[in-house]
Length: 439
Image (cartoon, rainbow, N blue to C red; front, side, top):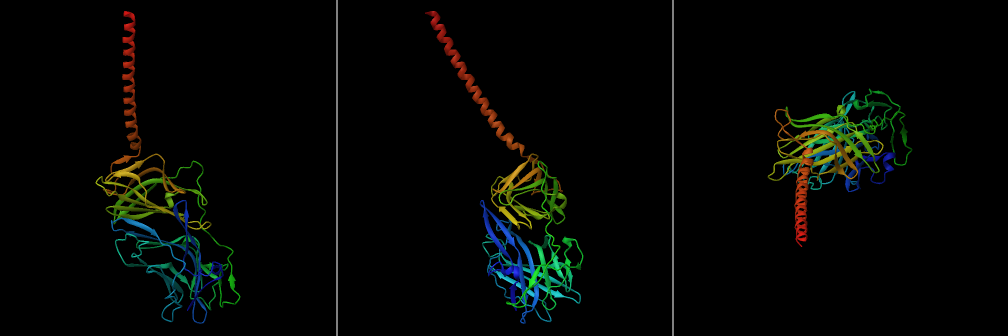
């Protein structure tokens, strides 16, 4: 068995064969992750390609901490990985691409076929003993999730194509894949000139203007390359008109069949710097998910182009109050790559436990200097929801009132002191004038 990168992959350098290549950048003090394309082929002992894979991918995991809080982490793969376990299979099993990395993490995809179709199965094992990714995980050890990919069987001798984001969710793991080119059980090691597009690309199996890819049959041989004349990308990121207010979305998270988190708000992403974006979140295309716990709650809002995570926590004091502790923002953009920023040290929307928080005015949540979220017409309750209804709301305008009252009291006291001093001054002047008249 041999694993090689195709022409596009070799241009990345000697470590190009890593299944996932992420570059960690620091942008104005916040963590920003950039995902890059993968270009890998698996060959048998005869140097014939049995599996070709090219895609971009993000991994995110939600785990429970020792304080019973739900936290999210974005997985970054190192440049150096092990391919032990990868093979072209045999008569009983199909090709497998296995990647081992870090402290006991393993991602693999194996393929099976029927008379007319083939399909992959992803197995992802992450190790919560990795203190870098999971510094305070309550559950220790390796956790494995399974999911089919593609979600439906693909016709044999066709290339699977998916340019839009295709999410694979299993338990607490979300894998977002896009710009996918994939074929297993290649005929004589060559990519097919037929393609099957994913449901997200909204196209049936059609004869292909062949796929952009290169399969090499020998290290020194001439590459056989096929090119596409109809490559699709992400839908363009919508840009609101100046002054356009985002529509208000109504979201909820359920614990079984019961609502445990309620939210109503309009959201607008405002990203500045080298990567700039102003985008209203469309509630009509946004789905809500999350978790509810006794001390933490998570609201995940996901659209075609972006994903926003809100993590609420109960303060570890006797005051019995909750607040917005953490936010993570992911933007999918085929031009600039995937952008990510997060902050787990926020302190917004402080509210008494058992109440909801409401704010009709525009608020700006600063996740990082270049990553902000403008919030409109907010009403949120992440804890103690009863019968699917909001409890008594604490209004953000009270914050203004709380400052206004002491200011007015201080002003009144200052005025009173001024009047007393003035009265003393007038009285002294009057006594002084009376003395002059007697003389």
